[in-house]
Length: 125
Image 1 (tube, rainbow, N blue to C red):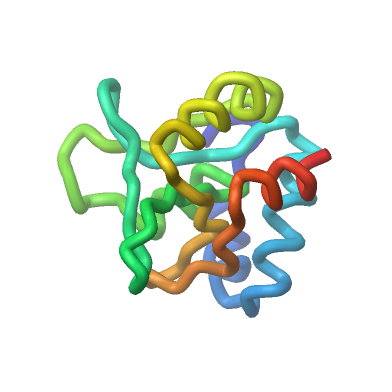
Image 2: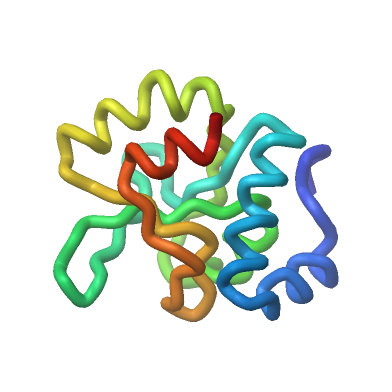
């Protein structure tokens, strides 16, 4: 567990929160810790699609909740910490080019929210 992560028991409790509370907790964690988490390996990050076939980048507030959602699916994949300023400066422009939105704190394929990049940027600031 990294210094900005949480224990498994706390992560399991967070996964039980409703969508509104998971969104609030995600943005609070990003504000408090200055980072968010995505899932992937050294070459790629995980993207998903919604029912309307929009490309979505799932994000989580802590590595442990990302691991609980994804671990064991593909060898070599893990939670990747992205500093919030790097995400805003480097990732959002690339996501815009890729026409992707952001899936906030998915649990069992249920997103707490799907935000456009503009909505995400606004909430983060």
